[in-house]
Every structure is written in C-alpha cells, then in structure tokens.
Length: 147
Image 1 (spheres, helix red, strand yellow):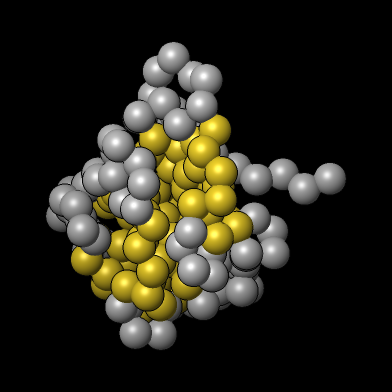
Image 2 (cartoon, helix red, strand yellow; image 1 turned 180 degrees about the vertical axis):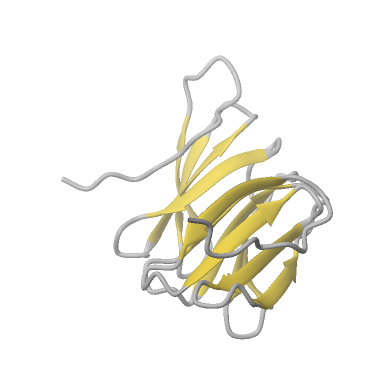
C-alpha cells in the first residue's frame, strides 16, 4: 500500500534516498531542488536549492547530518540537514558530476563525472585526494567499497 504521495517538485524526480535512521527520505529533482520529507506523515521538512537547475542525485551522509548533492555542474555540494545551507563545495571536475557517494564511515566521497574521471575527496575539508583516470567516456556511477 502507498503510505504517502510526496508532492511538491515541479519537474521529474531523478533520485530518492532514505536517511540512515529511516525516518526521512530525500528526493532530488530536475527542478533544481532537493526535498527532505518525514516518512511518518509525508510532510516536507526542508527544501534545498541546488547550484544547477538539474539535480542528478543526492544522498544522506552515514550519520544523517548532511546531504551530498551532484547536480548539472562540475561541483559537488554538501548541505546541512539542520539549516539547508551549503557547508562544503568540492571543485575539480571539468564536466557535469553524474553521481557521488559517501564511504561507510562518512570521511570520504567518491564522485563520477562526464569528464571521464572518478575522484576521491575528503568529506572533512573538500580536498581531492585522488583522481582516477583511464575511462574513455563519461562516468555515471560512483561508490566506495570497504574490505
């Protein structure tokens, strides 16, 4: 059974993700916004406006305090779930960032870009720690595996 219809975006939703505690869900839309919803009643708790008009993907940090956003730009942004303010911008890709994800401990971020590179970043200070090259085309997914 459908619990709630989360209405509010004005264009297509590209991704959705639950918070680590399962109490919230975020949606990322090509309308340039990220919305955080309470699962229990479907209420929109926060709307974040992205740098670009297209948000490709967004996800919660492992502790649920931040939202990682890859949008239609070369930059990646971390937003505070409390305030909705941007607290860190990762700069270095030469084309759109298609995807970004946290490491399980929340200390690293992996990103994939249409520039053909994947990058590993510090989630603490935004420093690019490693650039992974060798792909002949744009990348569309990134993840960090431990073990």
